[in-house]
Image (cartoon, rainbow, N blue to C red; front, side, top):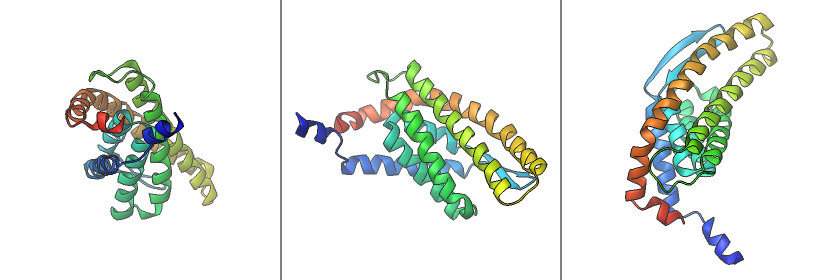
Length: 193
């Protein structure tokens, strides 16, 4: 029985390819963005969040977290945000891990979103927003900025992150059945079993 359990958690070449594909989709989607200046730098609204949520909902916590962290970490590294790449990598991994783990609780034999996939998208996005705003606050304080300036910066980031996160949840849930159906037809879930 223990040998069978080890086989279920074996990472296959197929897993790596699908995870890399979702990382690439997250990377590309993040290029569709609007940059917004804040008192301590800039933030952005982008389409990458939708695909971060989708990868977690579709592939589960670990694989979704790896895809999210890789895709958006590479975007930061190559897209002019290199100083934030390490924190993005960590926060996006946690986002995917939490959201994907919650989404994986329910029965996913159907292609329509269940309460667990929706809850996974919500918890993944809420986790990221809390991490992002908390990190922004701590970074501003550690760098010696005035508390008022740091709070203004965090408020500006919250004003963009929260509405963007809500839209990302809705769009990810709408797109979920299409991606789920495609992955099922491609045999992804059977090959993972």
